[in-house]
Image (cartoon, helix red, strand yellow):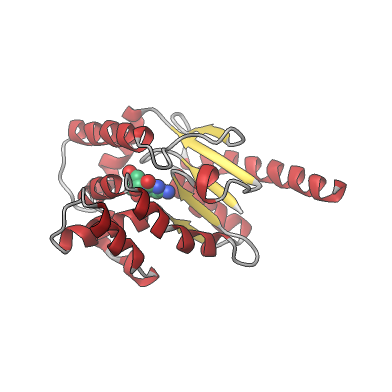
Length: 215
Ligand code: DC
């Protein structure tokens, strides 16, 4: 099981996808779960601050709802970060994530609390980061590619606000697990970042197999 955490647009999603392809593992982008809860709560006309309403949306969420392109928008990222502060929302999404993580053969999960809360025993953990400016630039280009017109400065502001909210909340705040390998992608191409991630996972696998053999 591979846990990939980090802030918005750090490259963790791309890295998780690449690791899944390299090691033949299914990948779950857990941000999509929170995005879906945010979008569904808003569509139902409920307040994002209403923990009960958001938790009820989380409780009935199904995998087929995660393909909605509306979840990939800038607005959905903000909605996700807002409902993600609620402990009951996080609790309602636990089982889905645990079931995915524990499937035979393993899995890759990316998010904010995978190595700390969802899978603290994951044998391989990465914490992917980059400067807010570089992350904003990546997200800005991605949104442009999706046809969303937005100023770079607004995207940078989004990133800073989400970092503060995701890292400052009481319930499962975004933080690096003590045993997670830090991967700073600020100056790395996608290829170089994916290669560094592969080396981290391979080293973790060697350690894990040695520990198992010594048991
Ligand atoms: O990875 P993302 O940008 O799609 O995530 C959207 C928001 O969802 C993020 O700002 C915080 C929340 N989130 C979370 O709290 N825990 C996770 N494991 C994944 C996402």
